[in-house]
Amino acid sequence: MNNKNDLKIIWGDCLNALKKMRSESIHLMVTSPPYYNAREYSQWEDLNSYLEDMRLIIRETYRVLGNHRVWVFNVGDVFDNDNLKTTSVWGKRRLPLGAYFIKIFEEEGFEFVDDIIWDKGEVESQRHKNGGINYPFYQYPLNCYEHILIFHKHRLDTNRIPCPICGSLNVNGNTQSEIGVQSWECKNDKCLERSPHNRGKRFSLRSNMMQDIDQRTPDNEIDEFILSKWRRDIVKFPPVIKIDQNGNNRLGHSAPFPTDIPEMAIKYFSYEGEKILDPFAGSFTTAIVAKKLKRVGIGIEINKAMFKSVIEKRVIQEFNGHTVLSAFNL
Image 1: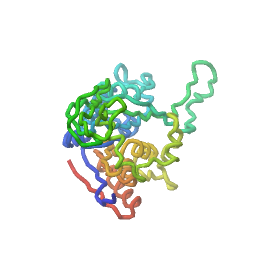
Image 2 (image 1 turned 45 degrees about the vertical axis):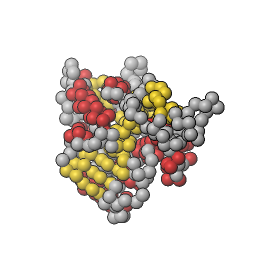
Image 3 (image 1 turned 90 degrees about the vertical axis):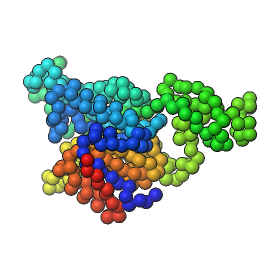
Image 4 (image 1 turned 60 degrees about the vertical axis):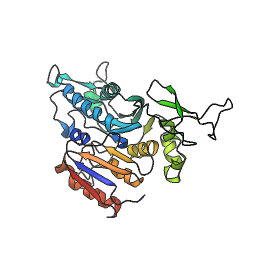
């Protein structure tokens, strides 16, 4: 696959853009959301307003994401004021955004699968020394990690699907798992695959997707470096260095997304040619990585003034003018 038009940016509000997308049209979602009132994102009156906005977006992504597909969601906890009781500096505390998002995703129908810890390495700040008061109750470690949350969508679908061996629709419902996977048993006596006890082939929409022989190609094989790097659920790699030698932010973003996360997500949870969506595209890292891995990279971003020139420049640099960035305005 080498389509020059498989890189797309949608300029507009994330929720409105999602509502215009077809149901179950995306194969994988990968993002890092705007952090609650951190950096340039200070737009929410309080923590509850932020979480409710995120909930509405997550609810819509459930509709848009393909069945039995994966959501990879990178978020870090923050130290801030939730503005629910007081707005003074004394109201600041650690806000466990990872925990809050797990609860929201589960309430909106997703299955929580894993929390991979991104170890960001040594902390540059010296605030943890707290004025040199090296006594009990004064010292706390600084946050040096973020969450990479993995969720699955399993919508129970009782529509019959053909046997992957013989293609027959002569199938009976076998079981329904607790997570929402309908399995089937082939009842075609002429099917080439039977068990020793003469049971027909048992399968599901999910197993068909995972065991698709046509997708066992070199481009879809996960390389040993990635497998080794992500072997444990605590993974160490540095954050993006965004300031160049002249002191300028080369990515136009105060919290740019490292390529490591979308690279893992795309290789682990999608096939070549599939559609990868980042609902909070920022500097467009997910879509660019998707394009490099022969997928269709799609991003939604509301802040056109901040990111338009940055994204266009990155696309030219990354692909030497050999790809086209298709832009859509809402």
